Length: 374
Image (spheres, rainbow, N blue to C red):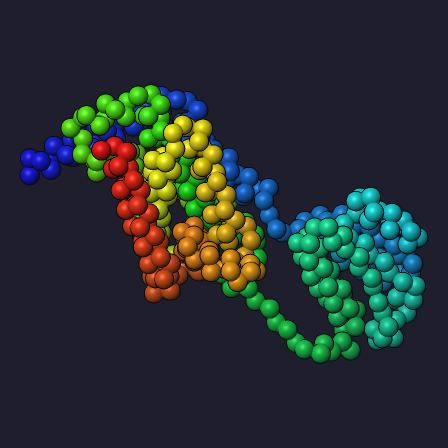
């Protein structure tokens, strides 16, 4: 019992030393507390797959009330913004070539007459700038719905669609990309902060020459590991609380699940992040080397997690490879808890994978750390 109390006291002093050393450097303090909020604001406001006010050029050869109402239908919802009008098709081509317009709408002569005749032969040409395929695809979908809805409104009871499609989006009714992106920021911030801080921790001791003092101190290897990782785990949880609070209270992201399940997933994910950071610190000789190795690990993990690109659209070999990525499993959990209110019965494979990877990475990092500190 006395040995356990002594170990606890040594770990507590080690944690206190790490916190003091961390916040002694104002740059690190800003990175830990300010940087996550800046990234959240960027992802919340600037990073979006939704399209608004897409630059649109209109060529109206019909010059009728019907053609003008169709153009107003495009601008009414805010998805399209008219930046130019002309009566010549060449002007539309020129606007698209120079990038001053992303979408072009060309209404042919006789458009209103064709609508009056029951819609037979009424056509509208929509031209899209395909250099940004995501914007073009989304804009195409919006344009098709606007034209179809306008045709149905004008034709009235005469309009009978071939199939009556009634769409309803579950979990994210507005299909807002913000609701999808912001919960994922929690995982990427925890991973980046824990990787950076932990990977620099041991290397800093080595460069300052204090690692040798720790080796001859009464600290056991597991006590040294606990003292090095506990502060950064607490910082990761603090960053998570800040981001979750801002997501729910400021960005109004719906949180429909259980907070306890999210905390459990975060603890499992923290084991992996801290273990990776500890392993990087144990194989690096300088802080610069540790810093570069951190981003060498972080970038592929983020790209293969489904954070920016859906895993389902990746080649089969990469889809299988992503199963070894803890960030992928954590993002599936946090999005499921946030938007679906999913429970352990639906997410237990992701929890199991996180726990297994966390234990394996921490065991590997601990053994490596013991060899350099023993």
